[in-house]
Image 1 (cartoon, rainbow, N blue to C red):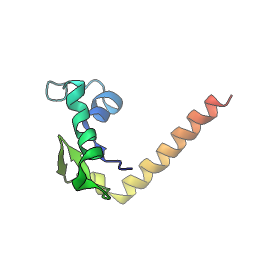
Image 2: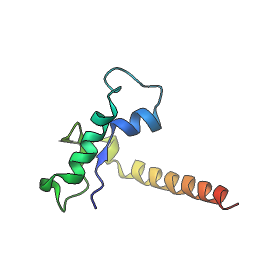
Image 3: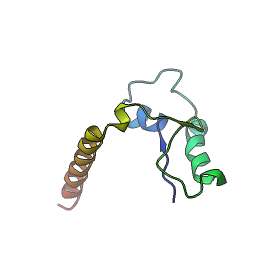
Length: 90
């Protein structure tokens, strides 16, 4: 199973919903295109750890490649998941 990193849906719907500029306000089918491309194109079979936007492979920002930031985000994600699981089990 491939799990590409795509940004438009996550950025506009989850992380920063008030940022709905015309550039990011694209139709659902267009938002899904990169995910579908990455999941189905034979050229990416067996590959992972790449960042795609608008069906094109892109270089992640320097901040995205920062290992200290990555570790902090991982720890925050684990904590938020544990908090959510804890609430659901009650």
